[in-house]
Image (cartoon, rainbow, N blue to C red; front, side, top):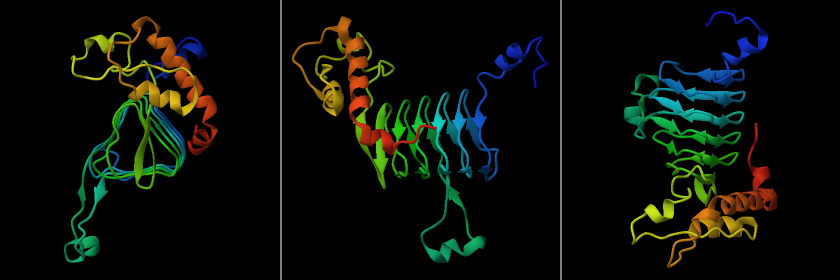
Length: 220
């Protein structure tokens, strides 16, 4: 613990980047967990850290989320109850992710930076950076429109090889705008100067018009 600061505000500032964990939180070992700066973990989180479980900076975890890095043999002869072996694979959650309530993440899964997992999902396979996934088993629903993604940042189009697609950002609104922003191929680069604003407008329009999807997610 750092020494007490002269004022209350200064004292609180010393812990600004600390992770925030709501009780109760159940962790199997505790020695195989790595939690980044500014992480928020809501109540009733369970972490089976047979292998490393890492959660990146600024990631938000809803209530009742389970991270399972441990598993057992399928063959009951080998499994042998409590006398059998415990196996495992690492689980990695990237920076700036949002994991909705009641999500279960299974061994070997990596959730890429900036991705969102819808409430109630069971994640059996890795999710790439800056995507939204939901369901049981979870499947990718869309790409997140954000300038944080290097592939969407201004100037990124001109830096790509000539044989790769370039993208336009349609600000007409709704999910169609998001799909257009991430999947429309052009024969020439878009207007880079207007890219960031177009991305922002597409993101706002998508969030505003897709209320059913927003309700599916849990914002701590």
